[in-house]
Each structure stands twice: as structure tokens, then as C-alpha cells.
Image 1: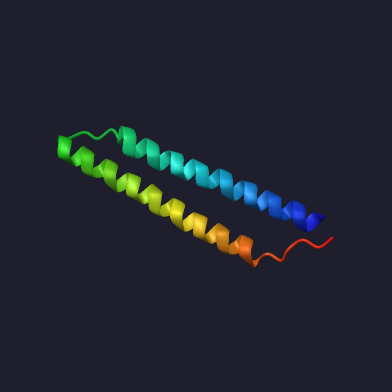
Image 2: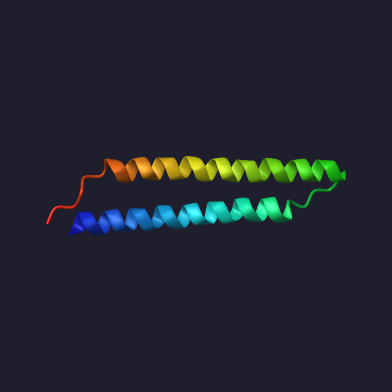
Length: 76
């Protein structure tokens, strides 16, 4: 039972973290970042920041999926 509870907690933490990262990526892509300077520099910065959050979310998802696959199934 403890293994099942631990697996569920890890799954929930990973799911919440992935959701937050995807929301940050979406918000950055939608609204951009406040940048002082030329308009093109602002657009480029928002694309770079949104790409960073998307890549970070993908890496986090892959890492959590691999960790969940490596856990032994709960035995009861």
C-alpha cells in the first residue's frame, strides 16, 4: 500500500509540475515578455522564452515518465 501511495504522490507532483510548465510556455507565447527596445527584439525574446519552457516541459515529462516506468508495480 505504501508503494502505491508513493507512486501516486510522485505521479501527482509530476503532473502538476508539467501543467505549470506548459501554462508558463502558453502564457509566454501568448503575451510575450515585457522588453524595452525594438519591437522585433521583443518578439524574438518571447519566442525564445516560450521555446525554453516547451523544451523544459518536454524534458521534465520524459524524466518523470521514465521514473514512473522504472517503479515496480504495487503488490497486494
